[in-house]
Amino acid sequence: MPSIAAFRQELQRAVSLRAEYVVLHPGSAKSSLRKTAAKTFVQSLLEAAKGTRLDGLRVLIENTAGQGNVLGSSLEELAEILAGLWEEVPAGVCIDTAHLFAAGYGIHTAHGLNETVRQLDATVGLGNVRLIHANDSKAAFASHCDRHEHIGEGKIGVAAFRRIVRHPKLRTIPFICETPVDSPNDDRRNVEMMRCLAAGGKMVGRKQKAAVGQSEQGKRQWARGKRK
Image 1 (tube, one colour):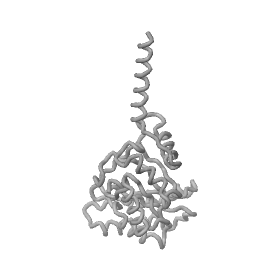
Image 2 (tube, rainbow, N blue to C red):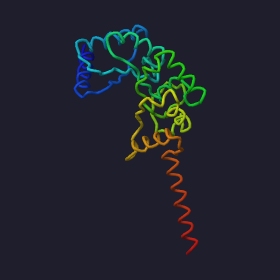
Image 3 (cartoon, rainbow, N blue to C red):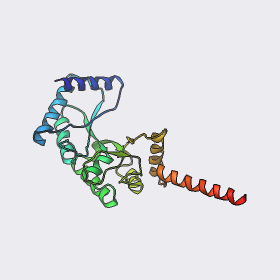
Image 4 (tube, rainbow, N blue to C red):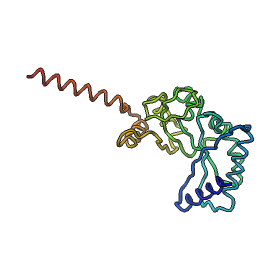
């Protein structure tokens, strides 16, 4: 199959780059049963990896928002996929915060975050969570819609991300931002936001900064006018 050959080439490129991980989504069930589709995905991945010397490369399956018939929106489904891979392919999971939220995991509240971490440990195992994609969400909770937003400017929010990045069972896992780039240096600002929150600080998003800047500019203009 062309897709199997293409993924085999992707694995080979990752090995040549000495990458630690290759992250992929588990695809869609389309018109078939989800369990059948998940088994097909596992078999296809095993076929792609057959005969390839991975040299420490690990395949990470990313959770999804659950739009349509896309696989991987539940942690239980991710665990089933991992179980099919472990004997032959080094595997783990990449957790995307926007996808978790859109799939109905309440990481935006303190209780919901703790419950989600508990479920993660009970299903895929926290030791198998090798990477976290940090994204706020433009879409509503449990909407099953995958739309990323700048950290602190979406439905998850600043306070929630401070709890996430400082959670004792998550804080040692690498975080990578996959946020939009709407203007120059947005990627840098999102990383700075995550670093500040990890240190326990408080930051405001781009929109709030712009509003504050406009307010301060207005005050200065008013003061200059008064002096005249």
